[in-house]
Image (tube, rainbow, N blue to C red; front, top):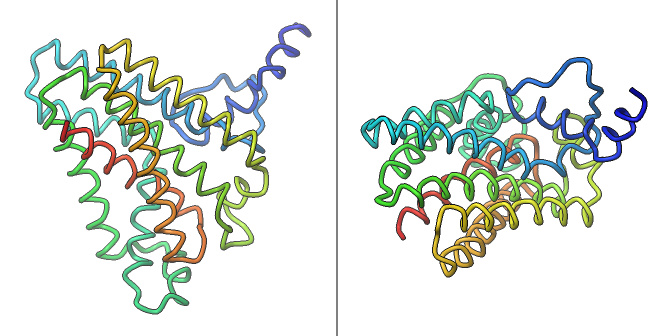
Length: 260
């Protein structure tokens, strides 16, 4: 068994397993060691993994002849279940913080466990836009690929935000990501995963090469812009705004691709 453990740690299995446990509700063998120190480097891989599960469900429901809108609602529901609402919680807290006109009080409002009216509305808007955006695709292959682009590049936006902007709290889950990130190599790894994964799946789903190129560039731009805008509003990031970067980037990427 010693060779197995060496191989497991060599390719970073302990870190990948921890990323699965942290970012998703997917199972991981409890006897396999995990290490949460540098899981942010695998966040785009988690996006690809989750998108492939959703893609399989989407294709299966389409084959069964389910109505487009209902099919999209089921896919978005599983999307929420697979993440446990991890990033959606950040959307609510960030919206409540942005509703405060005094910037110095925003972090205090976000730390309150109570979800305000703006937070509830933000969650509703995110879920509705995702559902209707997916239902609006006339090309089902493009809809499936849009899932991959949204989940992958949305999480790349979070990775970029961790690397580029200051973290505003001394403790918290987000602080762990910021403290342990190696910006150069981790950002390179995360970018390579989503670029090659997105391009490869695009070709597999027979997406036009010009669209693959254009959507890759625009998705990266959207994810960067969302992270930058939130950093400007708060003068940095927190774990909640990291989640908001993911969710709003996903929404905007889906909306953009639905226009093709």
